[in-house]
Length: 509
Image (cartoon, rainbow, N blue to C red):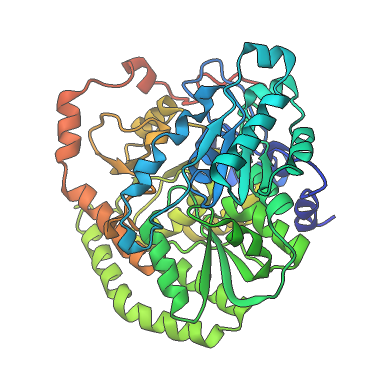
């Protein structure tokens, strides 16, 4: 059976939720070695999750990808069917997104209406179906929303709470569409399962049969780590060829989710994030899609636009757009490339260590190559065979490199950084932040609410903005100097001297 057919068949909307990424895509949470070896293991089905004897942190399927995304959906309410602490991740996001000026297109009013069932010990013992029902009825009465999202938790998963039964019973009493999302934190070691769980619920409960096809509408699912400027750049580029963008999920209305089936195409920013919704819309409603490349860098943005042009009948317009944009942005990219060549006196390329998710892995490394940078290694929080073809293309383009796959294990990342000693290391607050080192260190991406033009990474404007940001990180060493002077090393010397960053992996399991 062809692999592509296999993957699509695992989307079954008769079921309450999606398979885990471990089941659907042979995912792993830990790996260190050559990219070519990981690719070979993935092709042969030998990739699997592993255990650690010591672990600093983990990813929560509920909080990391859903609490901060679903709470921005307009004309909706979110219910955390969980102990009250599970909703804590949603507290800061009103303030985070408020930093985006309304003048840049951020809705003045967007949803931050969320409730919690505040599950207690008695609820675990006796069940909490009535409590969930009362919370749904309360949400309808207080907010009169168009949709009510229910986020499940470790607690409801462990006790086997019948969420669907409560939804069926309560749906008859409320106008809003109830959308249960099975995102129990313990259900998967791979936090990207949260992507699929959310999109499964959207496909099952919100997307409607198309009333009419909108041939100028393109669905774009935006990842957490892409900023408002990326959104503006994509809207600008597609607008110049007469296309409209249906951005989901941040700040989307319920109607935008309902109309996903009417779009001409689903295009990616992150292939692994967009995978489930893209395949589901194609399978259920015939909406075409592509998953690679992402619009990161000049060359990939060119190809991204060409793919959109192919599916929307805008091939000629796209070629005219590319030619026009190249006149503006390519000289600026060439100037950045020349600056990087001057940074090392030995004639070697500047060495950079970056990436974050596997989607960024397969888009960021070709972009670094385009800048004239060398990537001896890359890090990803998890990996699965949804990006096998893309990883193979990257290896063919830039050559082999090391990959570290781990979910927020900062010590392992500090170890590999010490061993490789790149000229610049890109880190992320979610993956252990910043640690003291002799060479430069800076961030991988901006926070979602960063609305400054220099925060962009997508499209032509983003290629230049991020390139200039990386140059600035090399030239301005004050942050690293202060960090070295004011903070001790994060770990003991013996840890930095360990030849194997997977020292705590349970071998043979």
